[in-house]
Image (cartoon, rainbow, N blue to C red; front, side, top):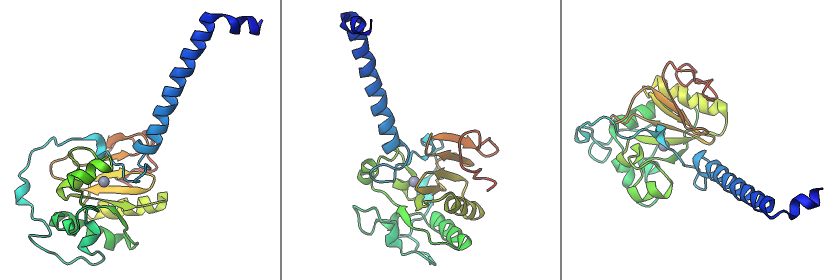
Length: 212
Ligand SMILES: [Zn+2]
């Protein structure tokens, strides 16, 4: 019976088609696992909530570290450099650095910066969104390997005034980019974007970034 079925050319073709589709789906899931879950080759993948620049503001009114250096308690400005451009940490915005510095003080745990400023080329290399806040000096990704670390960083960030959080398996993205929507968080695993007051648990987040 089974042999007879397998000899049927139509059935063979159907099975081949099913196998082909299954392998395409499997490849897509593997791609997502590696590059969409924030744990890709670079570990930096960060879609920043899938939100483009929706608000136009005059970026010239926000000074950079290079224009107006400030004292940082725990960081050298070079820690924010784009890896392909030594000294580019100078392009970080003063407002961001003050808040990030305050968050580090409140958290009381080391902040290892996975990614700070990014040149356009480096942003493409790590798979960042085209209008990434990193390319304008408004964001940093902080290494966080456990939910406790993730929660501690988000809590301290919120106390320091951040309202935009990307939660990933290996890091937390925080930015205060004035060109983007405030009071949102997104979860790397499924890239769900939820606004403050939303049901983060239902959306699969490990915690509610606005109440943790
Ligand atoms: Zn980021």
